[in-house]
Length: 454
Image (cartoon, rainbow, N blue to C red; front, top):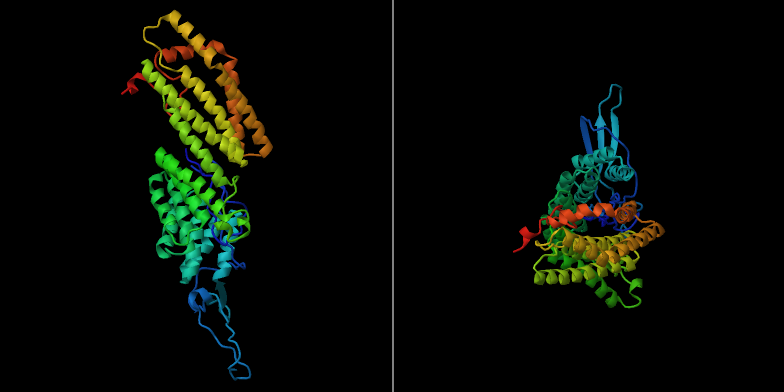
């Protein structure tokens, strides 16, 4: 399971929302391009003559000019700094008497590329950004342009090309703020390219930066946890998700009651309903749920008792993490967690039903065994249905993502149809007697139990 519910927004961007978006499941909002001050003009690429005026930005150590009045410099007058951004003047011979002169300003091209990116016109955005790279050498504009080109190619689904742009930012300006953002975006590209094993080293680079902010630290641990979860490295994933919660709790304690009024927002503790905190809680539930589903109820009796004890413990851990997510009140993850509690009860019912049956049972013993077992575990399925219904109501009330509404409705119909058709249960019994799970809680269907006993 890959969850993609978190999204890195470039600094200086005009935010349309939070970091929210997945893993590896949830929605992925359009990356916000870097904000710039003005819009540019479209210009032809072909030229036969060039005159370049590159009196740069202050950040690029532009030369300064002292203003003079009446031809005399006044000793007590403050210097007036006149700064020009990189500009290209293209002179193209024409059929008439005067050549055609076109002026390209880097900020205008950058603004125009951003506007196209925001509008979803990706070919034109690429055209503007590429023109900047082909024309101007200013390192600041090249850095920002490479980053935004990565965003464009991510939106086009070309994660390999996007990754190459982010790598250029990271390698070319390793200490810049853009490099930190590019590390997050590169991590997302690796997940999409099914290379989750490359993600943790990237995020450790983020955590080792001297300029790391609280928000960065939380997101790095969350993304690292998702990468480990994708690889089914559950112990490391659990540590990462718990770090998200503990780091944020420690920051809240450090701030005290008036902490929200001080400092940069990116350095403040996140509220409990923040999407990253809620996702960490939800993902802890998913870890315990996965481990819970891997336990098969096997004979002999001593093994069966141990399996049941371990399964019950993981059930409680998963339910506790899902409930913490529900109580967070996050509109995306709370209904998802409610739905997963329903599935947890449903899985427990089916897993216990699919316990290994003694080999010496005959037809009559099988009939009595399944009748008694179903009566004993029936409340679990009733609770599953109840939780699905509550999760659906919560989802509608919170206007959650349609995906969770659809999955919750599917769970309700699945349990209701199952309870309404007991005549089909005999087919399940036959599968279970043959040591097959009728509907496995794991990814692989038809698990053969006895072959898995050490």
